[in-house]
Amino acid sequence: MAPTHIPTTSRVAAAGTPPKVIDEVIGRVNGGTEHLSLAHMRSPAGWSEPGQTPEFDEYTYVLAGRLHVRHRGGEIVVDAGQAVIAHAGEWVQYSTPDGAEYVAVCVPAFAPGLAHRDP
Image (cartoon, rainbow, N blue to C red; front, side, top):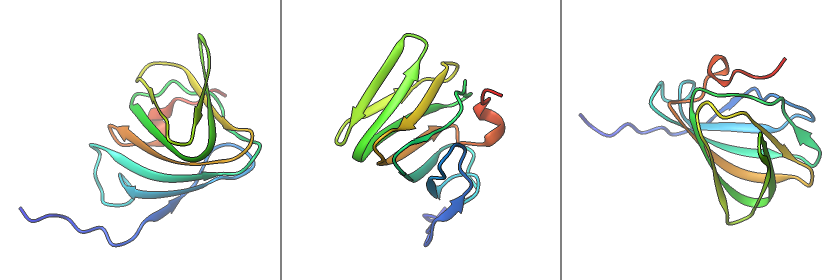
């Protein structure tokens, strides 16, 4: 089998407010894979999303700014150049009070129905 070339990203809808930009590089939408998703996120200052208890592991690397990750035991602040792993089955809530740019990898690939967001 030959390598799969994916020449462009796909803009996908984001949860939370104010709106953030998600460009899926590889995943269910862009590339048609369920094994893994890779997305480039750009979140404005003040963005937050509902909490979730996902069925996937999420590996996040912060490129710029600061990502806040609330969990049942407290909160982790992830600065540029740092990473965090949110494990499947753990409740987490992401926010960017001051804005952030980051890359997220989900295994298996992200799908809204697998996120199990809070009402």
